[in-house]
Length: 246
Image (tube, rainbow, N blue to C red):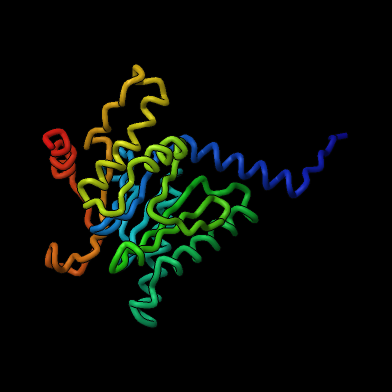
């Protein structure tokens, strides 16, 4: 006779949460931070095609860590939701808050009803007319939402990166300074992994990074209404190198 074991709902939820956290902990970190010129999205990501950062809609960006196929399906679903809502009602009716709510419902449903939870963390960012009207939401694997201020960090070593950012983040920075600040914070994990000798770690190179921005005033700065822009490797390398010559 086969012996059966009873697992309480509380233990089941705990096991699922532990499973999801372990999967996320294996992922490289992502930083989303506000600054004077808009919102910068910076990810440690050596892949040139498997993006962690994306545009969702007008002035709204998306960032993720975890399993690529899972957060990519959520990204596509968010774009479809935004397109349908904007077409059916008004483009002004599409907001980061609304998208975050939709993602929360999807993540929460999978976490409680499916056999395996999604191993992802998401951030939805909306750039406003000034830093005080920026919106930044972080979503956990179980559908919980955090309304963040100034910046958010996701990934396996988020505590280390967050500690570094807490000492260096500056709301009045331009994009160049904000991106360099994020890269330095992401690079702090190298020392924590034992790759350093007690000195400040060498910053991650442009080839190991994926960077995008949400421009606060793209019409004035670039002559376009599209706020989202990717920073290519050549431009990023020049931007990171410029700090050495300051």
